[in-house]
Length: 169
Image (cartoon, rainbow, N blue to C red; front, side, top):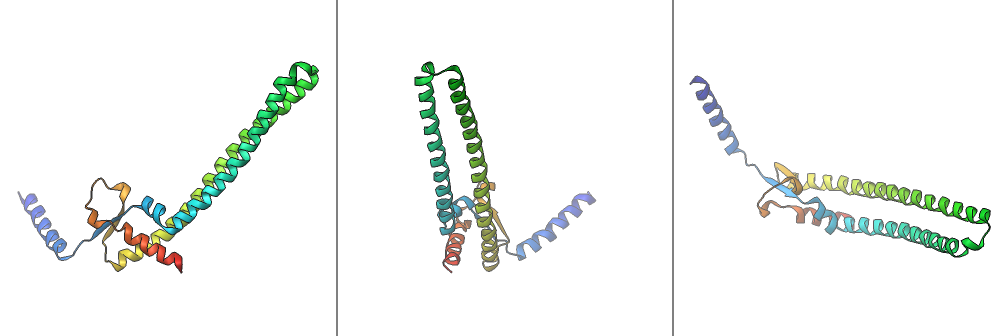
């Protein structure tokens, strides 16, 4: 009985303190900020340009390999065994080289994407901190971690606006 009385008194004290302090909670949708902010759009455009360049290089090499394969198929029966083996060996080497190049491009693009996102998230963290302090938020969460919330506590638009105004400077 004494235990429950102590718990009740503790809860009463905490609730009075809790009631005196105003708790303000907000959330931000980081994916939306990246998609809609000027910095996010610029990063996406730069990344897409790099992807297109890599794809163009790969398509060019694939076309060359296709041409080479076609030549081997057409001329193969007419060539001497040694010449045909040399052509087939060269084709295999270039095919393996293409696979490595594709893997290298994929790793390079992933790394560049991670670097761009890290830069954006670093700036975004500063902006969220500033907005949180200015608006006197107690807690700001990321949208993907929330199952339900009132849309009234979504500060994503304000963060995008602040981010874009900072980017103009």
